[in-house]
Structures are given as structure tokens and as C-alpha cells.
Length: 333
View 1 (tube, rainbow, N blue to C red):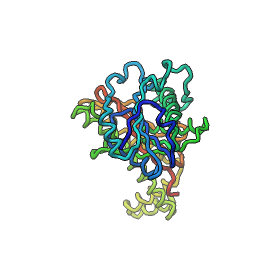
View 2 (view 1 turned 45 degrees about the vertical axis):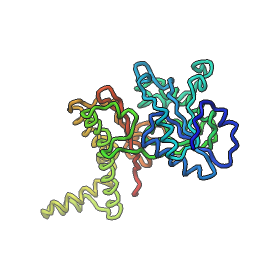
View 3 (view 1 turned 60 degrees about the vertical axis):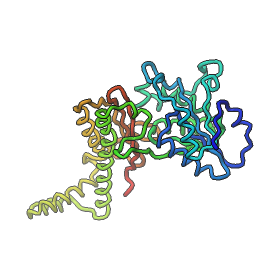
View 4 (view 1 turned 90 degrees about the vertical axis):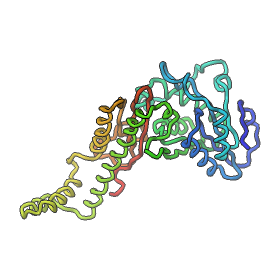
């Protein structure tokens, strides 16, 4: 049986035998949240406990954003949390989280917090980190889980926990998608059928970038296994073996660092899909498309090796959506 609590006192005074895992939400739970709760249940184990927080944080909403219309469905949220194995739903009031009013001392997101989502929504990440810090203190977990869909948020939470010595394990959980590829979000309910069709371009663009990246990585792997030269390609071409020459030339190019490709080609593949969506009715209004280093969310450069995040944000009608996928460059070399 899941207990609904509105103050931190029952959590603070409870005797615990195992690990406590927390899943932070703003309510309106969907399958993405359910996946987080199920994962938390597995991590906590039979002896541990899972706490789901439900709190619509006013500090994360800027002027003109959707704080007032953000869905509040606590009764349904408690049922979902219970179905997925949560022990507690912590649904505090604003006064419980911010006693005495808006806090004068807040967490600063630093340089990373001014990029991408932070550039579009100034102050958003300061408000997010402030409430996450407070909820971590109020719930006192051993581990906290967050969705990869909010990749920049996840990166900042990891940085805060490390920089400020919170001593809490942070687990990222892969994005959950609907059957058509759209990333699950509480905001999806605002989309009309026509807007939803346009919104699919976000995931389609990411998949196009991912496919281009996979093709590049495969070509690099072939080049590493069977090194060739431009001279070999030219000789084949002189013999009229155009298809063989083209393939061999592509292999030669894949080991030539000056040949265009890599991050630029991934961005271009995704951008093509988004440009087409901008001409639909209703149109997609692109905010940003970026391929960034998950450590600091700066743009990856040509020749980048290691992890990267391909991220996109756009508006369709009045609804703003974000999405991303992780990539790894140089995995096959």
C-alpha cells in the first residue's frame, strides 16, 4: 500500500532497513514516470523503499510559461505510483518546500545552465537545481533517478551532486517513447492531431542523425579492417569498375581526417528533417538542434570521440517539446 504524505516528517523519522530510491516528478504521471518507478523498485530491492515526489515547482517556470495550466492529477498519480511499487508519494505544499516564501539563497547552474534550454528559459535551471537540492534533503535518498529525456537537467544534477558532495547516486533512465516515436511527455496532451503529426519530426530528426552516425561508424570500422588508398580507387576507376571504385574511395575518405563528415554530417541529416517539418501545416518552429558533449553541453567538434548527445527543441502550435538521443563517436575504432 502506497502512503501519501504531505510533509517530510514521516520520511525523516522512518527507520529504514535498505536503500531509499527517489523519483522526482511534477505529477501528471505517464509511462515514462512509471518506468522510472519500476527501475527504482528494482534498485531499492525488497528491503528498500521507493519515494515518488509530486511537486510543481514555481521556480522552474518563467514569465508566460505554463505553470497555471500544468496538469495536476494527484489522485491518478498515487494510483500509478502504487501500481509500480512505490512505498510513498511525497506531495508537499509550496510552503513545505519553500518555508517563508521564495528562497533568497539558490543553487546556480553555472555556465552549463546558460546553454540550450538555459538560453531559451533564463533562470530555469537555477530553479530546477534549487528544488532538486531541497527535495534531496527532504527525502534523504541513497539513489535518485531521472529520465534521459531531460538530458541537460540530468547532466546538471550530476554536476551539482558531485560538486557539492551530496553523496547520492544519480541514475539516468533511457527515454520512453510512444509507438510512433514521440518521446513521452506531460505536454503531449496539448497537441492536436495535426500538431502531433508535425511534432513527430523531432524524433524523426534524431533518428536520421543516429542513422547517419551509424553509417559513418560502420564505414570507419570497414576502413580500419581493410585499409585502402586513393591510388587503389583511381586504378579501379581507370578500369571502369565504377561501383568498386566508389566503395573503395569511400573507404579511403573514411580514414582521411579532412573529409567532411562526423558531427557535421549528423547535424545535417537531422536538420534536413526539421527543415521539411518547418514547411508543414502547422509548422514546426525550431528552437535549437545541437550535438553536444554531455559533460558540459558544449558543441562537439570535428574529430570528437566518445559520448555525445543530439538534442532538439521546438514549438508546435503553443506547445514546446524537447527530445534527444545519446551517441558514441569512435566506438568501433
